[in-house]
Image (tube, rainbow, N blue to C red; front, side, top):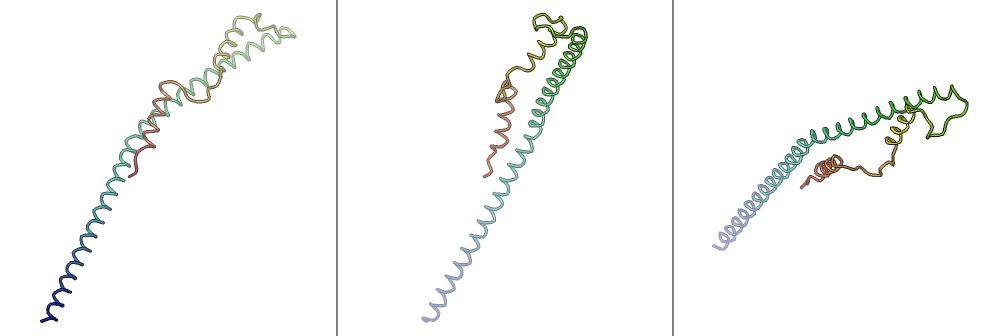
Length: 141
């Protein structure tokens, strides 16, 4: 009778152990699925943000291209104007006595070569910074 009771207790403990182990494995499987679902959500959010970042970069590239073209045009005009005035006289005129075309070119160069900012400014830069922070700040948990 004692042997049957001991065998019954061992059987109950064995069943309890199997059920506990099974529940632990099911819990781990669900946690793994949940973790991969979170990774999928983060990747989809980042994928959805890529077109916004591309448009922002295109805007900055267009602005940079326009600025570069304006500087190139102004410098080439200034070089052309200085070539004419330098061949006509041996010493250049002071800045206030330049011909009107040269003064206009110099004014454009002065405007384009103003102080260089140490950081980006303006609403477009703030918008780009916000997008980049949002893109990089996406939680990975």
